[in-house]
Structures are given as structure tokens and as C-alpha cells.
Image (cartoon, rainbow, N blue to C red):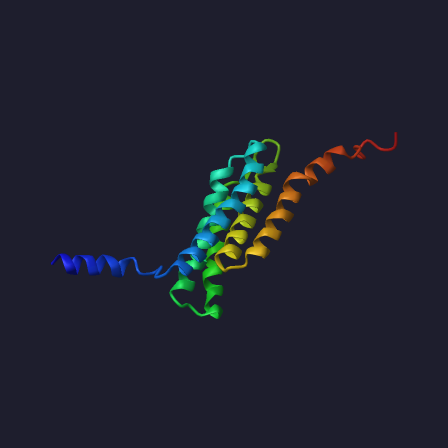
Length: 163
């Protein structure tokens, strides 16, 4: 009986059969967490609700959603359905971050929602083994989130007319 239990357990954990596969999965998941963390750290510094942990989990979750079907042998052409599902699911998560203040009619949270969406895209890139693309996307997103607000706020206010 113990031999059957041991064999069943070994079979259940056979999705990573060798060091090559373990290294590949670990690299993709850790990179997704790291890159999501870079974006989440910036958002947390800005006092936004979706911060470090949220972005790390979104990136790793998106990576897992494409990594597991790849391991199962899903054809690359069929991965589009998986990616569509990730995009739709993240859209709902991002929608929860958007708040419309009724008295002023001001909408808040659009940048947070877009950041979560981009973090998921970076996670998908990591999960599919497109590490360089994920890194480049993270760098560009970090510039957009971190640098552009400073540039915009340093420009003179032109709504007052010429001085």
C-alpha cells in the first residue's frame, strides 16, 4: 500500500521532472514577481491602494495562467484563448479600482487600473518566456508612472492665459 501511495504522490508532482524545468518555471515566476514588484513599489510610494503585493500577485498569477497550459502541451495558437481570459479577468479587477466621485463628477483610479492591466501583460510575457520584452515593458511603464507626472507638474499652468 505505501508503495502505491508513494507512486501516486510522485506522479502528482511530476510536472517538473528535471532541473531544467524547475529552473525555467522558477525564473519565469520570480521575474514576474520582481517586475510586478517594481511597478507596485512605485504605486505604493504614491499611496495608491493597489501597491506592492497586489502588483506582484497579478504578475505572478498572469504568468501562471500561461505557464501551466504551456507545460500541459497546449499549442501556441490556442494560447490566445488563455490570454483573452487573463485580459478579461484583469479588466474586472481594474474596474474595481475605478471610483467616480458623484459630487464633482471626477473619476479616480484610471491609472491604477491601467497599471494593473499592464502588470498582467508583463506577467504574461514572463510566463511565455519573453523575459526581455517583459523587462522592457516594465521599464517603459515605470517611466510613465514615475517620470511623466513630474514633467507634467513642472510645466507652467497655461489655463490662466499669458502672464
